[in-house]
Image 1 (tube, rainbow, N blue to C red):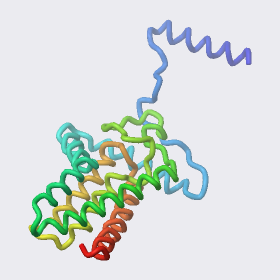
Image 2 (tube, one colour):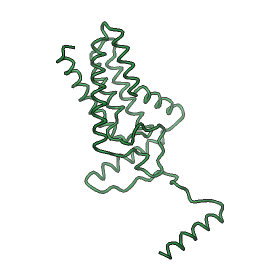
Image 3 (cartoon, helix red, strand yellow):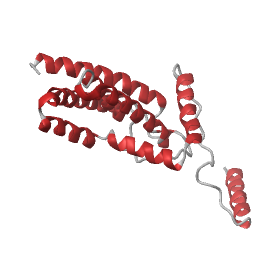
Image 4 (cartoon, one colour):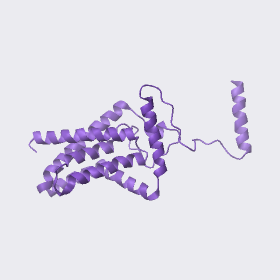
Length: 210
């Protein structure tokens, strides 16, 4: 122990003499070593996320933040209310969209708290996200789940809403990886969960006569 203390003191004195201090975080994000059956998959997932940072740029960051904002629960709530208020041909799609988004959000939040995968900013030393994390859990992506649930709910809706919603869902999922809020695997799982929730929402509304 005394040797360790002496070594630490020597390092501190050397850094002080040089007029610099040891950095608190590494300059380049360090992907941790993973052990276990899913080690290789998780390692690739983390490496892909870190590699995505090379595409960062001012205008792309603004677009990604805008897409993420559109994918917030508040935005879906406003969209559902607008559809319901408009009525007519948008009434039934609005009901389906509301049911699908609510189901996707509920399922994704339940899975997040069950699986407890930490966000990249907590798991990867030195990693910086470009967006605030709404919670501490990463898997699956709630934004992506809700977006794909809405896309499924709006399939076949008038005015080309189905394809537009699907394109938006892809953009929202990509934005979560670009901003460093989620790993690619989180987004893929969120998309799958969203499609299941969207289909279930449609069946539920149909069973209730909607």
